[in-house]
Image (cartoon, rainbow, N blue to C red):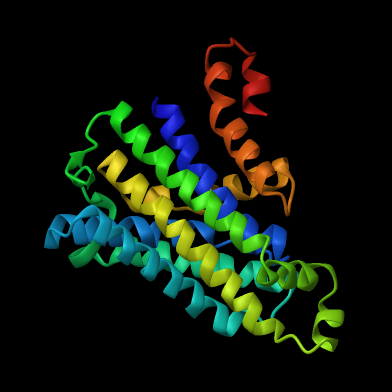
Length: 257
């Protein structure tokens, strides 16, 4: 059940990143930052102010989307490797803030004792109960992404990915659409952040590193860029695959490689 919950969280992360990388063609290496913004926002509001999980989730989405919007304004006129480096830098800045703003985030000590979510009077305390919530949220999020990518807005994103000059010649404001794609992808990553924080009940800056973004990007590439079904399959494979490998006695030189 624990692996299934993590699979749900990474399906949301992979699918939301696919909006940016797969459907719009923007090489974003800062997605873990939006994951972290969502997690910290939801955890802090629920623990320090006592907001309900639903309210904390909404604010987590808004905070992560705001982060995507703010990084998008200066960066989306960049392309390719330059955009990747800029978003990578943003991710490292956010991680540094999490680590050093100790009065708010407790820095390397992390935030313990994050309350379990409650919805419609039900408290999702056990792993089995949380899995039900995670599946519901994942289905809802994937449905939203499906509606987005199959809408006229989604077709414009694909046209920008395939031929930016042609989209520009048709009068499309490509910077605006890129900014919207990055903002939406970041906001949806905030959903995964909130789920993660309230499931693990402890977060610290070491979770939201470049390695997480690389893992998410690997899920997108493995499943197929621009494929929502592929994002789901890629996330499931890369979350589940390490488990049986742990029980296989591989030679140390292969493991090290």
